[in-house]
Image 1 (tube, rainbow, N blue to C red):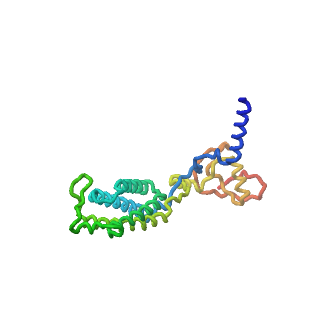
Image 2 (cartoon, rainbow, N blue to C red):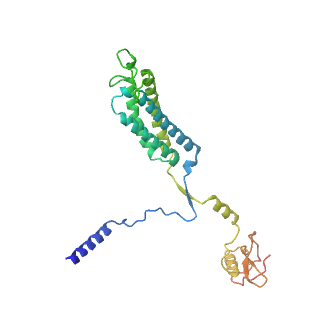
Image 3 (cartoon, one colour):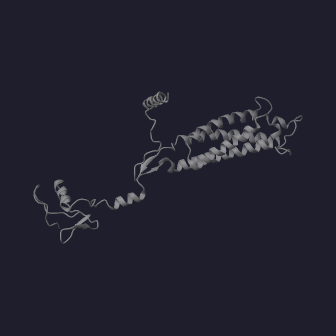
Length: 263
């Protein structure tokens, strides 16, 4: 009974492997040896400025929301915990945008800004009920803070709500501008140390192969140059030397011996 069951499980696994062609795909990115990943758009001054502007707008929104929430706690119509959660989300987005260049969070910040803009306009104008400015008239109770003390003046809360709406409008605009800068584009480049090293060895040969082999390749190319990474010693044994400008040799017909005196 065990044998057929194991055979059936093996067939089932083989079928799953055939259906899923990427089952054993490597999860790591393959990086060309000697190259580094750089983000060219992040090095631009406009990108750095826009990142700073978006971060400051998010933090300003957090400050305004906390002031309005704490200063007018007793008169808020529900959703009080949502204001705290909204502020935490803005702080997290600001952190990842500023320190991690997280481009994917910018549309989320814009979407949250649209929702908060609608709520701020309703609270400031009183479209769906009483606004903060209406509560300054006789017959309305004064707001109290989260801790039970006297809250802020209703006119002050109304002005802060209007400012919050303006800040959210700016957040939507600047978040979309920053999103269009393509912070996520990356390219492979040689590190600066490798570039300097390559520039210093531009006129040198690789130093591999025999002296005669290098001279024969130079002859076939039609340009006679003495190998510069290998120099001929007195007894004919090649040894490493320093890089120097190409040394021209006397012209000879193709196919002849390449052992000649260079000057």
